[in-house]
Each structure stands twice: as structure tokens, then as C-alpha cells.
Length: 289
Length: 308
Image (tube, rainbow over all chains, first blue to last red; front, side):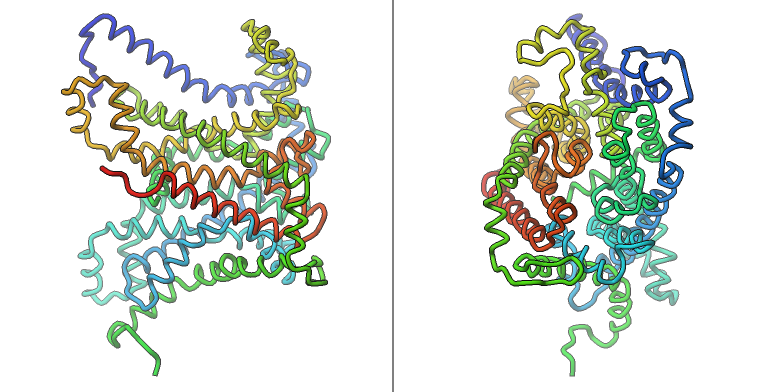
């Protein structure tokens, strides 16, 4: 729409517009250059990695082979850990967020406003204030050793105020008539929620799914707190950090860049397919201010 | 009898609602509100990670923190980072939002591109950045190829400047990195508010003979005041919590020579390197007080409803 800009009222205007477009396009492309450079570097040899050449010379899969087979712990293990944690956190956020969001939006119960205020108040408490007591609490019940470490990371991010808030706001916009019709047909509150409201909230569910997955997949703070001691439990971001800092991989750039690509590809694919929900989710999360 | 506001016929509704909110509320009460109080309790003890409280030290942890030169460096770095990074990222984000809000061809493409750097993990993007600004990395090679080295020489930077490894430039390199990746997020925040401004305001201004530049500064910018406030607050809270990039680039020590030591890194260090939970909890309280105070100051300065 409105694609046809009033064709060249003045030559100068057209020229200026062309220039502006060129600059804009240049800036947009600049956003991709670092990632493109990462991909290119992952196909280079180490001496070639510091050279400013677009085509690797020689083109080699050496870094990829090294990354996939020789890192300890294996990048496959890191990937599996990341998938497991991100999937679990996403499921809990969507489940708890939609149930609580629906209750806060639609059901009447004593103490509703006070409880919702508590939900919003959690946004004011930074993770860094929580980390010491949470760590002490979790270590006293065995969640800082072995498989408990996964539970710790999942538990502490299992539900966020943002997830509840986004879904509540969306449920508020759905007309009441729809659920009242279901209620008249004798459906209970959970049935109404599951059969009627949840399907109507698909866009908000998609936004929360994406925000939660992205946050968990990319997260570094809680994994660094709970998963650092056992390298078998590392996630991709934690592995990437500790490989470089402690693994002697400091400047072995091609395998590091291959790991960056592996850590980024799932989010990149999500972004390409669900770009709309990323943008809407962020915007909606921002509107609460 | 219990005091009850819900009439009897609504009781099933209330029970259903409590079931729906029970798990998240328990988690919040335990891991947010509860830990807040627990942190305050831990902070006045010399605490052993295994056996718990050892001896009561009152406010001595706080005295030691505020008197520690490393903590003063951490505070200075976090505040410097926030004060430079927030306005810079806001300016870029606002500029991008205004551009994307125009009726231009390829609007969706531009919006998607500008947000693109924000999708990757801090670990991936920081590792990438360290590679790009390494002594013989992409950035130094490109400026050499473009013949810009004499210009950089003027500021005392050699052709193989180690941007992230030199204490003079480490923190500024992180600022540029995070301004680049976060400007897309700020753009989306601004965009939501820009789209709410009615076109009629601009039409009226155009009739009065205002050009685009004047319209921006006299109309758009002041009308965005709530958005400025929101973005500045979110940015400030995020800035004071700087951890990921400092940890990835500078390890828990904030290398080089504390150039990347931030408040949160200092806390992480106290908890996991020095293993002093009581002390670390006190750092958390100090951080919270700083953040809370800064939010209040910001509200006084920029808050309130605009006169529109």
C-alpha cells in the first residue's frame, strides 16, 4: 500500500529519496555482515581466518569436523541440553501463563487484584538479588548437584510475570459472549478455558512461546550459576563462553565461529518463520510501561 | 465463619481460579518475594555455603563492600556503561523507529533487519564481536583497507589495536556492541508509541509550514515522552545489570585489569569465586537499592503524564 510515491515532483526530491534508500539499505545489510562473516570464517583455516577474504582459501570443513567431534563436552551434548531446558521452560511458561492469565482476566475471586499486584511486583526484583537465597535454598534440597542442576535452571525460570501479563491482556480483548455461550452449554471453567479461550488466544500464545523459548535458549546467567560445575550439563551459550575462556580455544576462531552458528541457527529459523510474533511480542511486552 | 466476599453461587468460580493461579503464585512467593526477604537476612551474616549462618555481622558486609576499591570500580563501570549506553541506544532506536514508521517500500524488511541482531544469544554475539574486533580481526582489517588508520592513530590507536583486551577501550567496545544489538528492541518499543500518534497532528503542522525536522522535534519527540520514560527505565535497569558481555569477554575477574568489572560480575565473583554468600547477598541488596533509587530519580525527572 502506498508503494507508489508521487513520482518525482522534483528531480532533487527523487535523488534525495534514492540516496536515503541506498543509505537505509546499506545500514540494513550492515546488520547481516557480522553473521555472514561468522559463517564464512567457519569454513576457513585458522591462518586464513584473520584475512579479509570473502571466499575461504582453502574452503574446508575442518572447523566443523573439529566442532562436531572433538570438543569436550561434545557440542551435540550442549545442543541437547539447550533444547531440553528451553523446551521445558517454554512449556511451563505457556501452561502456567495461560492458566493464570485467564484467571486474572476473566474469573472473579477474592484477592485477585492483590495477587496480580504480586505478579507485577516480581518485575521489580532483579535476578541478582534472588541469586544468593535461591542458590542456598536449592543447594539445601540437592538441586545444585547432578540432574538437579537442570531442575534448578528450569524451576527458577518456569514462569514469568511477562508471560502471565501478555496472556492476561490478550484474554481481556476476547468478547465475553463466546465463553458465556459455552457456559450455557454446561461447560465448566477448565473446559471453557481449554475448548474456547485457548484456541482464540493463538497469537498471544505464539508470542509467549517465542519470548520464553528465546529467553531460555539464549540465557547465560542462570546456567552460569547452576550448570558451570559439570561440563556435561552446559548449555550452548555457557559452553561457548567457557570454551573460549578456559578451554584453550581462545583464538581458535573457525571452530568458535562454527559453534556460534550452531547456537544461533534454531533462533534464526524461528525468526524467519515467526518474525511477526517476535515483533508483536516485544511490542506488547513494552506497552505495559 | 471465614470472611468471604464471594457469594455462594460463585464459589466454584473462585476455586477454579485459585487452582489456575496456584502454581505460579507459589513459585513467585517462594522464589521472588520470599527470596527478597531471605536475601536481606543472609546479608547480615557471615554465611557458610554448606552449614549456613556462622556469625552475625550486622552491617559489616555493607561497610566492607562500600569500602572495597574493586567494588568502587565496579560501580563506576556500571554507571559509566549505563549513562553512555542508554542514551546512545535510545537515539539509534528512535531514529530507526521513525524511519521504519514512514511509508516506505520494504518497511517489513527494514524492521526485520534492524531487529535481527537482537535475536542471537549474548554468548554467540559477544564471541562473534570479540573475533571482529580482535587485533588482526575484521574491524582493524577493514579500517586499514579503507585507509582510516591515520585517523585512528590520531587518537592513539595502532593498526592492531586490541579493542576488547585493552583496558582503555574494553568497556566502550561492549557499549558499541550492546547499542548495536539492543537498538532493534528499543526501535520496537518506540514504534508501538509512534503508531499511536495520529496523522492529523502532522497534517496540521504541515499546513502551518513546518518541515519534517521541525515536526519531529516539536511534535513527535515531545509526544513520545511516555515512551522515552519507559525505554529509559528499561534501559537503565538492564544497564545496571550488565553481566553477560562482561563475563564472556572478561571472565569472572572482569579482565583486563577490572576494565569489565561490573556490579553483577562482582556479585558473581563474591558468590562463586570467593564463596562468601553473606557478602554476595549484601551486594545484591546494594544493587537493588541503586536500581530502585535510580528509577525514582528518573520518575521525578521525566515521569508524570505529558501535557497532551
